[in-house]
Image (cartoon, rainbow, N blue to C red):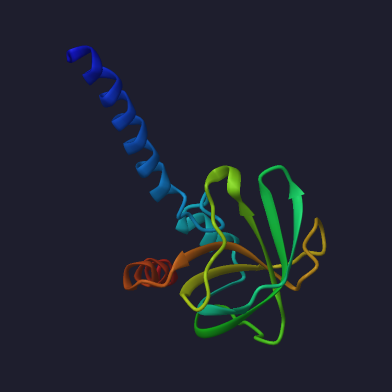
Length: 145
């Protein structure tokens, strides 16, 4: 009987490891950047929701870029944002990032597109966070410093 126990334990550990990594797969675009770094790279930071996703294209292995996505900004935290323009962003699935969901609210860290690279939209998303009170408070703290 003990000889059978070890394989069952090994299977249970493997399955639990999969469950743990499944929570990591809930990461959003820009997950490699901290809030401070994303804030400093951003032209504007706002709370909003995606109203439509644009076209997608593969930029490289494990990366999907979305162009022409539309966002409704509900609260500007830093800078300005023209809601008539579109944004681009990358989802790095190799890092466990996932595409954001509609109609959930997010904190958008956005830079102006410099015309270089693959982004053709006027703005590019640097980082997304769920629009929780804690995440908004982190941004407000950076603004007050």
